[in-house]
Each structure stands twice: as structure tokens, then as C-alpha cells.
Length: 209
Image 1 (cartoon, rainbow, N blue to C red):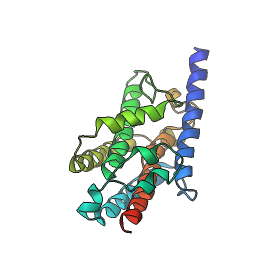
Image 2: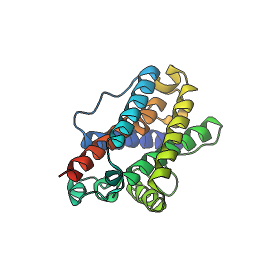
Image 3: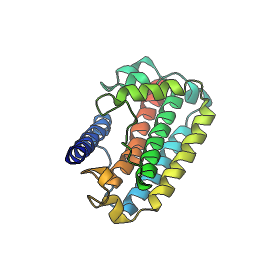
Image 4: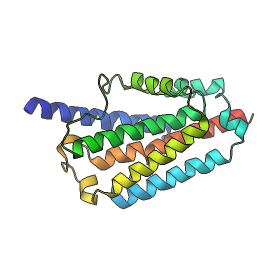
């Protein structure tokens, strides 16, 4: 039992470190992370709306265009060369929504489940992201938009069912380890949307030259 607890704590620490590093590397001046339920909901919806407003400024040609070669060298992280177009970014957000939803619903119903599916861990999760990418190579952009909007709605509805303390008080749930449920939700919503927005802006800049 102690071994499982230690592993859970270790995984939570690694998750928090990796996720935070991902977004900090994308944007050094990242928006402050929510620490209350109200701020989480506001930030998630505002960033999601901001993402769609940005996409709506693009022409159909820009939305369907292949990212310029400069995108692949815009940063050191794997995602810069992985994602080839707007669709790829949107389905990535969708798949991480699914991870969050599945993880929360399973554990809430008494079925112990790690955040990442087997055989992945926080050292190998980039390979999981590649599998998500492969999975959606035949997904039309219009469908990617639809499923992402639906999954955002699902995530926000699930967040609403938790109290502020359940989301942000440490040790509210054993399955979140030393982190909080709210921290996971922030990473899968507002912070992830901020990541996507920065990527879209670079695409627009490159495509407009």
C-alpha cells in the first residue's frame, strides 16, 4: 500500500512539473494559473473563446494550410514538428480532454485509474501524443472543431460538479497525489488553450508572409 501511495505521489509531482514546463516553454509570460473554482471556470471559458475568435480570423485557406517549415523549428519540444495544421492542434486538445474526463470519472466511481493510459508514463507520453496525431489524420477539420467544442462542454460540466475545496484543497482525493484536481483541470483547459493560441498566432504570422 505504501509503495502504491509513493508511486501516486511521484506520478503527481512528475505530472505537475512536466505540464507546467510544457506551457512555460511555449510562453514565458503565461497567464497566471487559476487557484479557485471560479477563476478556473472563467479562465477556461475565456481562453477557449479567445481560441475560436482567433481561428475565425483565419481564411478557410489558412485554416486548412499545412504549417510552414518554420513552425517545426519554433521550439525544442516535440509538438512543434508533430502538428502539421490547425486540425492537429485541435484534436490534440480534444484527446487531452478525453484523458481528463476518463480519469476523473473512473476514479470518482471507485475504479482506480492513472491519468495516462498504459503503457505510457510521464517519460514516454510524447509517444502517446504521436498516436493521437496518427489517430486523427483522416479527421476533417470541421469534425475536429465539433468534437473539441463538445469535449470542452463536457469538461466544464464535470468541473461544475466539484466544490472549490474538492478542486483546489490538497489531499481532497487520494488519486490526485500531492497535486490538486483543479491543477489537472487548469492544465487541460486554460493553459492548454493558451498553448494552442500561441501556436495559431505563429501559424498566422508565417502564413501571412
